[in-house]
Length: 108
Image (cartoon, rainbow, N blue to C red; front, side, top):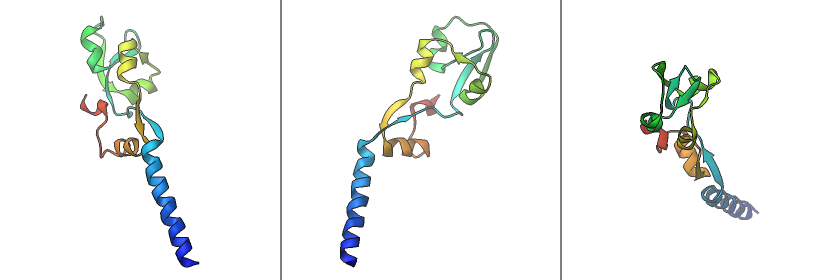
């Protein structure tokens, strides 16, 4: 009886572990992701998109969390594409969320 319980427990753990590599999960940018606020248009810009944008001088270096608090929208499709969630497995997404692996936005 005890051996049966151990075997079932090990099987469940192995299945859960393998499923973590198969189950998809979106990895989203954190609230501390660096962006540029364009106050004139009440929008935010991804740093990689800044050079190709026609912006005013009413700019501020900030975070995505701050932009969301101000209810700013993405400046254009370039920013939307740069901040789009990544499709990862459950384990990879978890490792990125806790900081063991880097997200693409961490290098901004």
